Image (cartoon, rainbow, N blue to C red; front, side):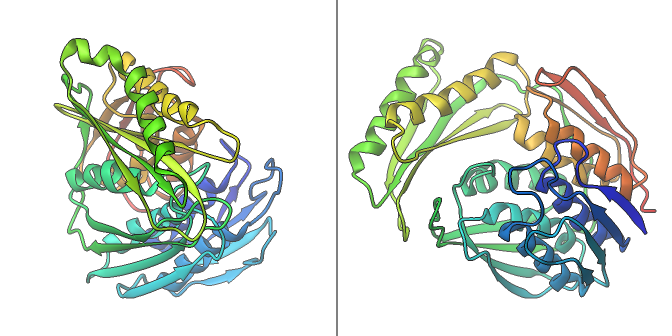
Length: 348
């Protein structure tokens, strides 16, 4: 049985989620200790527990330690089975993170699967649903993994209440990935949204983002950010920006909160995009770590350049190496641009 220290690397829930995904794929049981050891509230919170229970459901796994607050877990998977599954976080816990735990294992089943997850869709410390749909899903498609995403309602902190759906089609194999040059910037698009709040807040968010991105107009880059009023049980705002290059797509989300001016939301998203854009690198920091497990399972060597090496990227490389015979090479310093190479994997 594999032994994993949950405090390694970035030391958060990603260690657990990646381990769950790869355990389901490889059939390798694991024991993890020190789950979220250095977080303000260590151990399994509701969204992490749902990821465990969801992975156990699709893989008919035996689990010990699946309790709220647990800092130790044993997960012994059976065979992953395609089907129709529904899971509820019951809080504003991140639905995209639960989906990301399940998508990879379900890609390697014999049939198509349908997932429904309720909870938060645009919440802190998580990729937003827009990022998942507009950046991650197209990148996965380049590897040969096909998913279809839909959103029925939006969920913000603290009430949640959002609902998302995902259809996962089986993949015969995954192709290697190469992204070392992005080409020129073709356009920037996005969405400024409010839920149960004045439309003027979304307009102010958009205005601030557009003003901050004004330098792009000198290069005649099309810039279009739509205004949306979204269905939600609570209240919330967000601004999502997507940069489309000749050979890459990047995405960045800023969230509103009580007492936070709309102008700051708009500038935050624009700042993140500009920091990425100015490096000249093709892959944004979020996609870089999300791709790692898939590239370790691909049928050839992959290589890409990213605008920022993060703790999440380093962590995913380390956890992936625990389950797969995949060699990797990371060049560059933490929080700076760098390159990643992942050599073909053989399941242990």
